[in-house]
Length: 194
Image 1 (cartoon, rainbow, N blue to C red):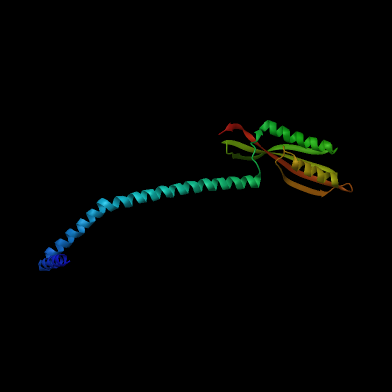
Image 2 (image 1 turned 90 degrees about the horizontal axis):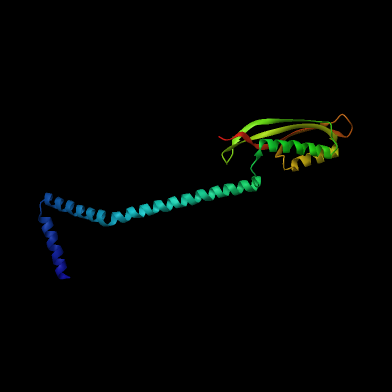
């Protein structure tokens, strides 16, 4: 203990005996040696830790994106039900018209107007193919009970995606309704992929 204390005192004495420039040079040399030791031994560890942290962050972001996409798909599935791809225009258009005609015949209604048209809305689907809306404007007169049941049958029919508009008004005959609605279905547009 005495030997180390004497050595410390001797080094301190020599340091204080130096000129101010010499003391400054010793301090600069000591700081330089410490920086070299730091950059040689400890800095690579810090760099590899940073790279590992970046890799972990990227993995977490990737998992989060997959989770968000999965949640979004599940939410859409719950909200809209299973997705079925549309048929070709001819098949779906024919099925739409035949379904409407069949339902009208089922209720014994022969005096009705049915006009099919393309909705003009074309969007690019997930498959890369464009889908288009076709519409069938339907107007008829029927007794109250039959009109309500007929509308329910139209909505329940798988060839009809939805009834876009529905207008009910009192018919000219007592106890009847004038009904005007637009049934719609989605089909692949002509021209396939674009």
